[in-house]
Length: 193
Image 1 (cartoon, helix red, strand yellow):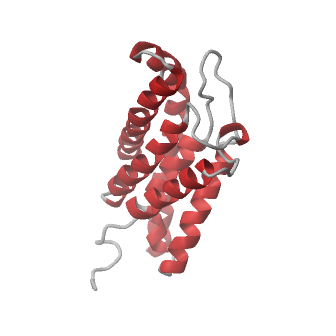
Image 2 (tube, rainbow, N blue to C red; image 1 turned 45 degrees about the vertical axis):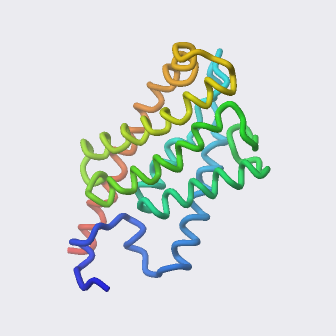
């Protein structure tokens, strides 16, 4: 048991909420539900089997806010429940569709973003942007090969249909996160002082 103050331990926003196991279960479940809700904000992308949604934003914020263990657990819960039939993937779908690789990537992106956030990767706009870019790259690293296999696409076509149309939207989501997360930490520090 560490006696270090919270400010010197590796913390994420969820660590500021009192509690342990019950708190973590509620946060993980709520984050999975929030990601499912964000997946319903759908913008169809012409020529792509993958729509633009808010779920990547929710997945990356989950990792940053909950940390690597809870962030990965929330995204794993989201993936497993959706694969089992809960209609909370994009457009109210479920199962392992052509875009499921991106959801698999959420698990690993949540872990990476959570790890970086615990090391201060969400405390300044520049660090937050870098953290979110890395999280997006992880999502693409899983999503593109899955899309290639599911839709029988070559790499160039998969990048054209599964990455290129989303770069502007991802940049906007990263900019929003780079504003929101450091501002949240600034508020936390203001209330502590």
